[in-house]
Length: 83
Image (tube, rainbow, N blue to C red; front, side, top):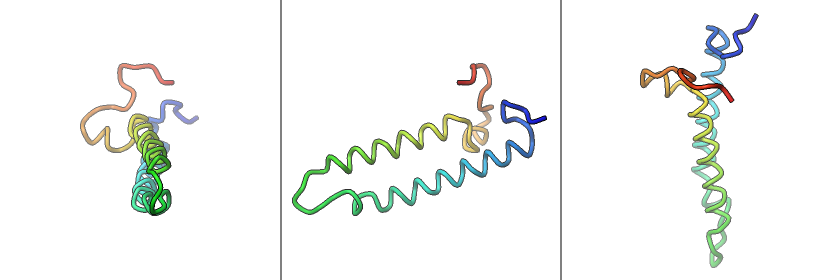
């Protein structure tokens, strides 16, 4: 049976790997965001919207307890209910 909290060894490792890959992909998106969302002479509203969306997604990945949180010595869901 798989531990639904994600603390089971193999499940946790897969979750961490997926989170790490997700964060790397977001870095790649950020590197091309300006050229993908702007046109010379136009405003930057699309860039601003896309940048906020990428940062929001990154925040969600990190808050779900990816490897970065445990490296700081915190358990991902300790003391709070899961959503």
